[in-house]
Image 1 (cartoon, rainbow, N blue to C red):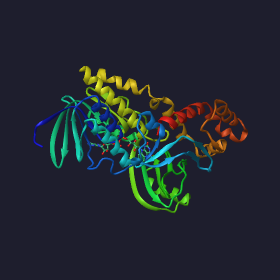
Image 2: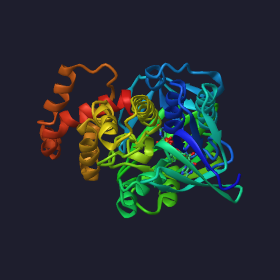
Image 3: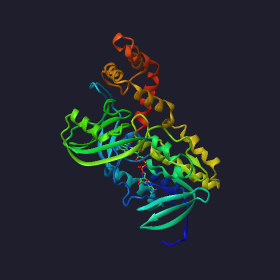
Image 4: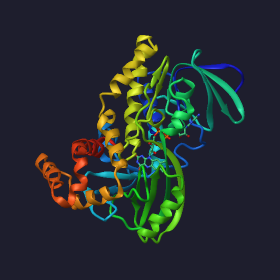
Length: 398
Ligand SMILES: Cc1cc2nc3c(=O)[nH]c(=O)nc-3n(C[C@H](O)[C@H](O)[C@H](O)COP(=O)(O)OP(=O)(O)OC[C@H]3O[C@@H](n4cnc5c(N)ncnc54)[C@H](O)[C@@H]3O)c2cc1C
């Protein structure tokens, strides 16, 4: 590599689900696409609970291949601190996330996208549309028409493009810590909304394979390691730790602006993660696809201006991931006192809400009028919002 400047139609920064889906769309439409990944091997290290709904793949016409599915999941349970739960019978998959990311990247490469690994984008000149890259200690530059920032929770492209300030972005991230453990038996995806141990987030035990599970926590508290240990003790989990991982998840909704002149931001980098379950693989693919489609259209008509690219934002704002109930519900839930959570669990009981009817929902709301649930009365006005957010999340949020 020398000092020459390479030329591409589209540069994609990051080869996660957002970047590879965006790159696939652009390359498929005949554009010259270069995708950078700073890690030497796509998908490694895995920093994920690896849970994905069946709908997420169906929606994008992706066949669930054996090569990236670790387990088929039948149940998703939201579990309260007192042990009561809500069961959702939607199908899902426990992925081998590294294999899944590699599958998505191969799909993009097969239609013509070029991939460069161990290549870190270290700067972006918004005026000139030139990215600066370091690979094997050598620096080079690439001029492009559009940059798709799919660089995950680091979100540097958005910062270089003036779409978010570093400090503000930091406030949008919640910490997550996870152990892959052997000797843990779980039926499907168990999500523990226990705000004493995991304020601001939740804990999870996801079936990964025979007696293997991903056990994790996302919390606004700073001592997530200790808190997860407390949970493991409480649940009397006696497994062997096979792998540890940690990361940050955007949890405050999408950035106020997700495009600039020649720039689109997709996936975690744009903050699209579902605020209720904190799932971000599906939303990364949804926004990756959309950003790729809009970038392709912009280049085809020769207009990569901010004005034209604003179409991206108009489009994702029409997707369920942008529904205002999601953030509102997360805010409401996290503001509940432990007492309210306990009562909420009591109210819900042990219920399968998979096909809950409007009458069923109304029955739950009316039950709060019983004296023992009076502590929940202030919550009644918000219940339709929370219920709406859960039904969107079930399908679109993981
Ligand atoms: C512990 C944990 C558990 C989670 N569990 C789940 C779950 O069970 N289900 C779910 O749906 N979501 C889960 N998430 C969230 C999910 O992992 C993310 O939402 C998802 O990976 C977002 O995809 P992405 O493509 O936007 O970003 P990423 O997958 O983060 O990909 C971004 C890529 O960009 C690369 N990159 C970054 N900067 C540069 C640069 N400057 N130059 C080149 N490359 C760069 C990174 O190396 C990375 O490969 C979890 C997250 C964490 C931290």
